[in-house]
Length: 510
Image (cartoon, rainbow, N blue to C red; front, side, top):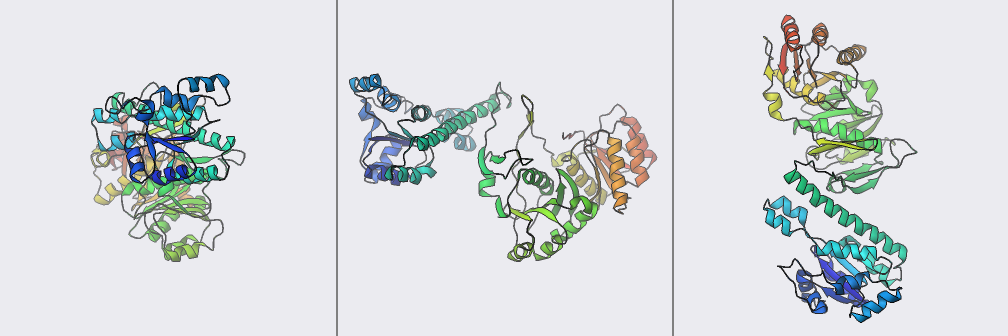
């Protein structure tokens, strides 16, 4: 029996090779892998010696040879294949262990295109695909995490067709992901990220209990390793809907650096937000905005959750709390709540991945776009178009309102007072309706919005929204501007002595 081992990632390869050797496998290897195995005292043969063909072109050609691919691909139960292999002196290769050149790692550390090109693996994917195609006869290994599992299967006669088929699927996933990564990089470098094909590749982090509804399957897939390495399930099980709500809550709560912010989300929309010196005070204030909707909500906390916070949170029914960390006392307190789910992200604040692209499924395909990023300059450089200018505290409230509004379903308006959201209207077909709903809700909750700052993620098409804001006592407004009626909107702001700022950037979220 022959095993071909050629890996870029040498982790665990010595023990794996030693295990194979003890099972009677003769080792074929190349380059650095061969050196590593031999230095460990394991007998191995150079692929070049076996093929009688040395490495060429600075290592570009090593394993691209009929003796290699014939040894992998010939069918053991096909008489003609077996006779051809014998005729041409091709030995069986029963196991192929390959992981590929570190293309992605190279692009992270270097912009040298020639170096990047040289880290595109050719022989590796060819061998992996060949072994996967002939999985009936060949064991294909692409993940060092599977070494122990494979050795166990070989030792205990569990090398079944079903087992090899599972490895075959992993192998094709591996090469597909690798090619997609290269194509995406090239399109990003030369086509602004918009090539003829778009590849969205994620690795499964975990299954969810079901999808949005019980009759749908669901799972979380990740681009990098945030969810497998950083996102910890402390209590409960993350559902499909939990994860989408957690995403919305964290995006808002983490938009303010290390400031102690708390965001409460229900069905993808914020129903409470506040910034305070202590997270427990931020939670109390956020809860005031809409304590009714907060029932069964998802809470993102930009700071450690302690016992005082836990006691306060346990006063109502919450479904999820996500934070960088929890004290042991807080976890003990939360253990009283059977249905509450707890997740941590590590660190001191909610350090969340920020993707540079975004997409949305539509029937028959998906629409793809650059990610919508709010820059600090966007708010800082917003142009005051009214006679009245905002005071320092109003500018802070405008910043908070603007960042929240950019992450709320359109059409929306967000009212903020003293760094806390006091009213929100979202997902409406009319911006005026959004304003009316927000103010109606605030009135029902007994909240005084006078003196609040207002943000809209898109321009006001008419002055009526400013008139409604003035009636509610709003003191400052920020919006993108750009309407043909901007002059009328500015005129309304001046009539009502409201500070009005145009950011120049629209943030629709559909």
